[in-house]
Amino acid sequence: MQARAYWTLAPGTGQIRAQQISPPGPGEALVRAVVSGVSRGTELLAHRGEVPPEVAAQVAGPFEEGKLPGPVKHGYLSVGVVEDGEPEWVGRRVFCLHPHQDRYVVPVTALTPLPDDVPDERAVLVGTLETAVNALWDGRPLYGDRVAVVGAGMVGASVTALLAQLPLSRLELVETDPARRPLAEELGATGVAPQDASGDCDLVFHASATQAGLQTALELLGREGEVIELSWYGTTPVTVELGTTFHTRRLAVRASQVSRVSPHRPARDYADRMQVALRAARNPALDHLLAGPTPFEELPELMQRLAAGEPGLCHLVRYPD
Image 1 (cartoon, rainbow, N blue to C red):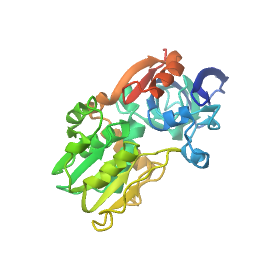
Image 2 (cartoon, one colour):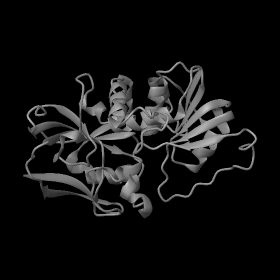
Image 3 (cartoon, one colour):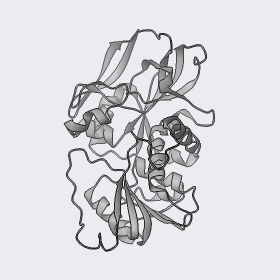
Image 4 (cartoon, one colour):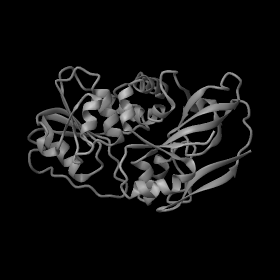
């Protein structure tokens, strides 16, 4: 069989290529993609050639082909329907951490069945919601905490949506772009500019992927507060001020990354975390994170526009029937 997939050929250049795929064997499934999503974080770093070589293997998706900076087939937010393979899977709607490709064969263990009350478009966010679930497990927000999220991108907005379900004393989404701040109210938080954000936070989640954003996150903390760092900067160096009150207020910065289940949940595994993300995906407010869709054939041009700054958080790619 023949499939079509999006490849990053070199920094700033992409192309849809045809390739042969084999029929599914025992324990495998043929998935017809319905919609996929473009992550403005890692995917755009890969598109621009800004992934450090020493961590390229760690950020590769489970079905990535090629090698960064290119040619490489990168991506990890795909929703589709099983067309062939294990009989009990045929006809099921599924999520898979697979690159942008119209048909693909994977082990059924790589598929997550989707509940009927999560539409295809919103289901694309399941991968990002899994990152957000892990961030909350790392941060461990408590009843009545004062919390801020810095950065209203795809990850920051997903974290905010989860936090809004908790009994917090205060939840602010801090964003420099005034066009993104109204999203906070849709998610159940208060949108503010950095200069208007409330201080003395118990916990701050940073997801702006900027040096200034990380500095803001530190400045918003109260005594013994902690920043959960979700940004990945690629090859960009980051400097923050640690010589003022960082030590006297006993602040902390904790890295959070989805490739490992939070050590604060030792009894949970990847499957448990994914089920929590699926429950979170039932929230219709998450539809405000979606942009597009753009036809699959136009994905190379879309990547160029996104890299140039076209607005939108998670841009959907629609595949032909």
